[in-house]
Length: 502
Image 1 (spheres, rainbow, N blue to C red):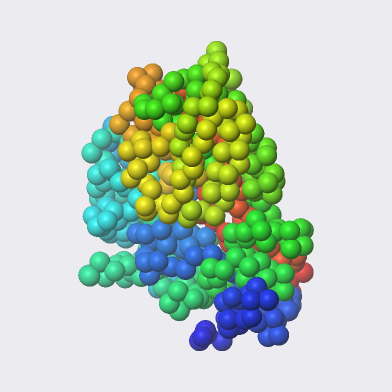
Image 2: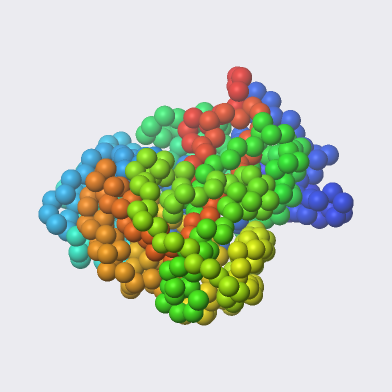
């Protein structure tokens, strides 16, 4: 039961015919009026780690605009000022960040170099480390009161982008406790102050009038965590939520189409083919699979046309990729399957993937393959997939990690020593291309190098991108300027408001 008077009511568990398990009580709903400027937000996943910024819960803090980082990323993945106003490379391993003046935290303390040193040092020495710092040795020291020096053991041209990760948010020193616990309540610097969290059910935020930038137009945010997709859809339909994240594809047709917005995600549904063992070791057989796949059929029938057919590994969420993509030169000619038996595997944790497997099996059977399907929970199938025990594996894969750059994903999946190389791919030219891209500073030259590496990977047919996913975001008719962010770092910012507010 929610215990804050500002929170919008949730109903109890209703009858199945209402499809509102854990949802909102329509009888108690309140209509948004111009004077009511609190945004009612329904989110998919509850906090998993007490909202510590050192975990994936950090992305909730950034989506609520309560915790801020030194830099943020623009549409091209380039670093832009936030709590740092400028940065420069001092030497091969050290960067100097100049801090913004007159920044107050929600506990009224002031941003200075020691605050930043404390926050980043805690993150760098945490166990486990934030994901963005995997394999990175990072040290921070003050350079006077208004700047910090951030050093890595090896040259890292992506360091500014790395510091944009919500897991490296800068909180007041009081947020970091001696026992390693980090609490963001009343400790951020954003336009909204996190006032309270009620377990895994709800959170309350208010406008922070002492914010250094543009003041929030909404007076607050009332968050409820609603895991049931039908309930989130119903919340938008009945008006008991102003903003709803991750509406399931199955619910979208039931809603007013003017209230739902599809956001391209940096996530590609890819078919990985085992290039080292079995039938798919033969490039001609991989080419036969490539030619057999009907992407649009999968997009239309599994995703109900709410996805984008893939032309490469990187999709519309990275808008620069398409313009730099070149056709694969001299693609391998498809062989004749002649009844060759292959094992097609995927996992059941993402509900759409087993259905994708059914369509793929039909398409490959029509092309002449004999297809066996294996579907298990991800925890039970990952080790076999990485060990190369399947001929083909369907995976929904994030193509940019926390730095906003795809090189880490491409190295992990397609380099000889990649830790997630399901395709068992090992090509010297691909490794060289990825290493070259990784060494180039962010900008046009790096993006061109990334697309060259993508071209080499696509030429092997060891990974066949099928579609790029979208997330469906629901917004009430009166809510304006909700953020539609492909990286899922922002959702509500200072400009989010209701129309005709008084």
